[in-house]
Length: 476
Image (cartoon, rainbow, N blue to C red; front, side):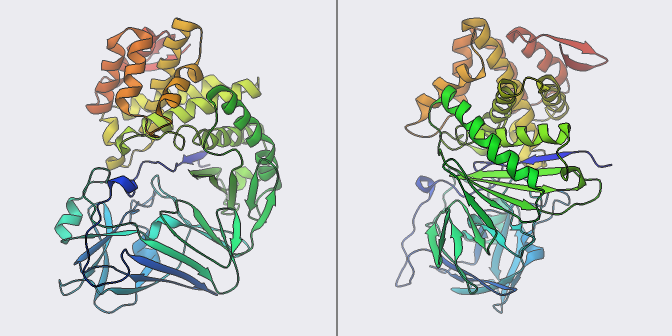
């Protein structure tokens, strides 16, 4: 039997994403139109096309969202996309999928691509979703591009583009379906056009149910208990987060639920969050019935994804290497929410997994985990750091993780950014112990073959009781 896989990805997540709008630098163009790249995405039956109208001459155009497939670490785009325009090559350079002219000159201003969307498990990025009724949901960001001067520059471009001089405005993308309306930001429209939409666009008629607190778009073949549990639990956990942290990014999210089928021996739940939208993908025979184990995992999954409307959407991290702030923080939010709602929930078991994984992965720098394909380090070590912050908060005021977190969120609402220094300075202020920060920075920036001892000492000095058992750090 394959173990349960809970692959969680978030909107601000651990990937080479487009920089924020303020980080982009517009470059003047000559007498060309449009003033920014434009893309038209069309479904016509089983045929999909993306027509690119590029706004300037450049020998290379790179795709902001260029994640690898989780299992193979191969670029997904090279298998799913085919360039129709003669003389244009789609290939990989460093962290990015790129379009380049075969002759080394500028890429033609008009490029046509045919593609076949396929649902893949990507490394901390948004993947296309396929529904059993033929509906398909595409993440809007996969069509955004930026120009570069050479393949060598593309190969050298960093995975985190915040602060990198991107000389282009965000692409304007239009989505249309010859069969009828598309679903865009919770509404059916004849076609949708937007720049930096940061959402999924649904082609097809997947079932949509609206309530005062939630909109669900559900694969008709998804086991019925999943959507029922989400419709019941998501508003409850959102109410708890609102009571403890103040308003989040939305109070009526859309939840999009896809079903990859009853694969034998698999229990898989993966997902991501965008503004106003939670996307979940379920797979495997292990999901067919709501066993206690699977039901508990599903509630935790909902709790983690919902947490990102506060930690990830209301406030985000400054750099992709700081994803431990939102991912580990959301993990502990979900654990504490489930404890409050379900007294039988095994919080200790979940937190022990966080400790085990952090010790295993922090032998190398956590801040470089994305480059190694070890995104789990952001979740696990971020949760360990959150546990330490919670413990010092309890010792100082009798409070908990939400009490540590709320002042940070409130102080960052104006600019929407919670930086690493702000988080660690809050820890210093509450704990009065600078060694906690030093240990965290060692794991973040250097890693250590003695990661277990560092984690054990960090937790002990914070007030979390642990024991060492055959080299393992065990929560007691």
